[in-house]
Structures are given as structure tokens and as C-alpha cells.
Length: 213
Image 1 (cartoon, rainbow, N blue to C red):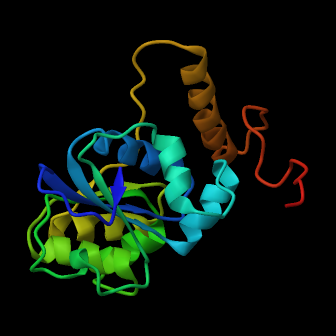
Image 2: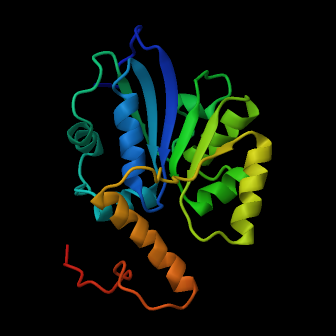
């Protein structure tokens, strides 16, 4: 994987953004499989996403490029990865004249959804999303929140009407495995929460003893 080196062999170009919602593993896995192809990838990680990376993965806050290499294994020999600063508006994907094959925000926080839906370009992620929409290129928003309030739903409607594809990470529930049952029960626990029913299907946030950094 070559960082910052132009290649004449890439087949497609994509913009990948990882926001500060839970489930950053989704973004890491999308990135992994894209890099198994001769693609050029522009990756943007929000400030909040860096914090979630530290909490949900083995990221120690150091060199993110090295961390991604360890996470993603061996990429395609002609894959090219650019890691962009979320405050840098001068990178190529911030301009409509830069052609790419699509953008995915995975996971997409409700804050970022709201900014995209209302045309608020307050960082590189939302600027690139705005450019992607105005240039009629594919924009996939892997929205992470449940349950949804009316503001979330209306923002999804706005983004959808503007051309974005809203794609919440709904798991395929066919098949059977212990892991699938565990994941399903965690969601059922959230349903029971809203019915005010006591359960032990998942550990409530903040109840575990936090180890100091």
C-alpha cells in the first residue's frame, strides 16, 4: 500500500470517511476490502472517530497509517491510500472538478447526517459529501443510531432526496451462530429498555470499571 504515491494502475477512486459513531469497525472493514483492489482511496477520519478508534480498537493514538496497515493486512500491490486531515479543504476530493467513483461515510453519525442533509460544510467530510451530491456521484451514508427521532428521520429524508443512499448497518439474520444470537440479543435488550423491562442481555454503558489510560 503506497501512501501519497500516484499510480497509473488504479481502476477506481473512492472517498471513505469514518465518523465518531460507534461501530468504527464497519469503516475499517470497508477500507480493508476496497484496498484489496487496485483502487485509489482518500480516507478522512473525524476527530471524534479517532477517540472511538481508541475505545473500540487497539489504536493507541499514534501513527494511524501504521495502525491501518496492521488492521488491513496485505493490500493490492497497486492500491493507493491517502489519509486526509479533516480540517484540510485543499485536498483533491474537496473540489467538484476532482472526479471519483463514489463516497461512503461509515459509520455516519447523526451530527454528520444533519450537516450533509442541510448543506453545512464545516469540515472536510461534509464538504466532500456536499461536492459528491452536487456532482451527482454516489454517496452512501451508513447511519448508526437507534431508535431514531423525528429529526434523524427528516434529515435522512433530506439527504435521500438530495441523492444520498441511506444504508443503516442492518445485519442479515438468516443462518444461525452463537455470535449472531449475541448480536441479536444485544439489540433485543435495547427494545426491552424502551418497554421498561429489566434484562441482562447487554452491559449498560458506564457500568463496567474503566481502566486508566
